Image (cartoon, rainbow, N blue to C red; front, side, top):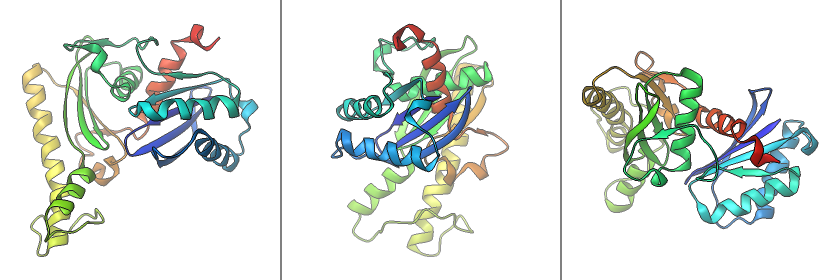
Length: 258
């Protein structure tokens, strides 16, 4: 079995693969104050709940956008599972051609998303990843990463709005029955849900017009559940695309695992 971990700014996502099949997942908050022992306890409880033993695992791989936490999580994994935990970065082969000004700037999460999409679909695609930030990733017809659009994530944007606007409040992110809200809560939810859907549709068209051909549309990320049901005609929903990418990268780095 292989343990895959995606450490984002908001969530830490665990995934367990057995014979290339995802058999278990768990999501928790990314806590910068938590120690290696704290993350070890989370891992122990997750595996216990899934009836999995440390001896079941042959390796692990981590994608991280919080460098200050990476070492703590790697230590937790390696101590409990007694395997090497790889860290996505320049030292690992991803197989992804990166056509941007400074390839080293591309985050491990975006690399993993891209590799996951290519390994699964092997065609040019647009990946919309709704996390702390909303990212639009473009994979061209040569299966190279062409670039991206990054904007404020759904929840982060509206949390900032509630913090900085005295008359507005936090919302529960529920889909209102109508686009035009009749009260502050429905109006904010309409902005969070329907405005995001409109943004995705229009930006998708703009990106395809610029690149010059149609792309396969893939929706992923921790906040994608809020809008996925509105985009079924345009997008394939891949909840664990980044974990699929991590598994693919892990398999490309056999010599590092020794």
